[in-house]
Image (tube, rainbow, N blue to C red; front, side, top):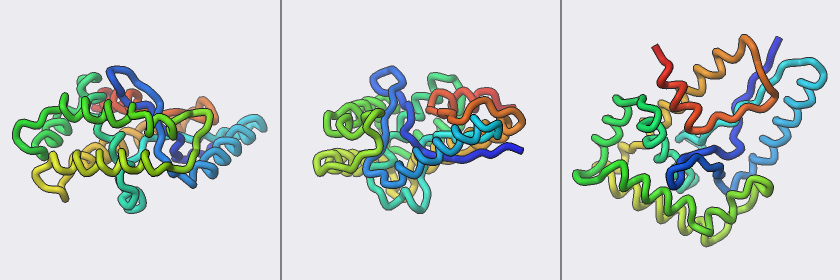
Length: 201
């Protein structure tokens, strides 16, 4: 018997050309996520295979109410391009934005957003989870509004496409790992998921 859980403890995404850890705040469930990791570690120490997979945020009914949580999803496009995979998904993404908008422009904007001092202040691994700040929320909400404005239709967003790709890759990894779990906590950053999609079929 083995056990698997899906969690969130921040994610490595591309920022200024390198994968760096970042996280969303406020994330009150974060304390529960840390406790879940500890439960998996305790079970592992007692001989029971249990793994918590820390995965990227995706758009769901619950995350949809937290404006700005979707901003770190956009760099997944660059991760797919870097891994030379997801070409159909990338084409779909770029078909949703206004004429003249490029992937490089979107990445450059998310680079600036995710490395803004107000965002970095609440994205410190050893202090996560943290409560949000007024400045952090202003940066994220402004960024989300700008990114939505790049689309042809504000109800048909790139993040919908990317969420499906991330969900699909996460499911495949967890399913394949179920036969032989390797550790109590496993991190699935954008680089790991992009590479997983490149190995499909």
